[in-house]
Amino acid sequence: MGEFIVELSGTRAGEALALSLALLSALAHAIFGAVNKSGQDPYLNRGAINLCYGLMAAPFALFVFEWPSAPVLWILAGSYFVHIAYEWLQAVAYSKGAFTVVYPIARGTGPMVTAFAALVIFDETLLASQWAGLAVLSGSIIALAWVNYRLEVTAGREMDGTTAAVGAALLTGVMVAAYTTVDAYGIRRAVDPFAFIAWVFMLGGLGFPVIAYARWRSLQVRPPIGELAARGFFGALIAFFSFGAFMLATRLGKVGEAAALRETSIIFATGIGVLIFKERVTLAAIVLIGLIATGAVFVELTW
Image (cartoon, rainbow, N blue to C red; front, top):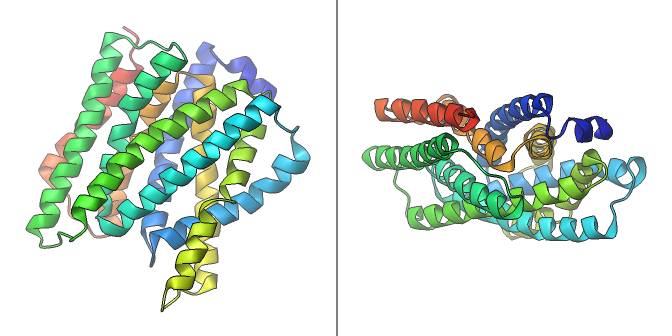
């Protein structure tokens, strides 16, 4: 299967598959974000999810796929620390701010930074129409965060930690660009893309769960282990579709395009915020969601 992905890379069929995988990742990531945000504590949620997908991936990484080469292992080490920083910042943002505010900020910051990184590292150029689409997409996502924030203030739900949540969300976006670039570089160096993905998930199970366990022990009222385990198992399954599909998309097509398309997850996240978290949506938000979709279409245009 890995050889099939490698053979498709850079072809028209590969680009079409990359588009489908990026959109699948967008839907899955919105669901993943909701699972992480819901429940009693985003730190514990993330720890449970990581532990579950780490345990699931370990047998494949250690016994099914060929072990990575030494250079790829160094890339995996860098990816490990970048992911921990990303996950911690995301948990901070989710614990202090509304989902429909911090999620758009984090997701809107990443694509533009990733596109510039891909230009420097992978020599991937975008056409003028694609840069315009990327600017519209990212700008609309950030504007959506502002609209949702004003809605929270009007409804009297402004939190004391809003400033910290926004700062953490912005840094989360930078870390999204960082892990996207590092993982894209690694999966392109790996002989088998699926082996690289398995190692990323296995190592993920060794990082944030330690932080989550320390937090769990400090709580006076601890959530039931069974509840965390169920949330972790479900979140792990979603993570394989979200992060796994996205990494394959960066192997098959352009990193900048995949990063931009993945952020259409905000469209799905807004629906989840309304349906699950009972957060209101305004006409301005609907218009901005339309602009996000328009920007994504322009990113895919090649004229």
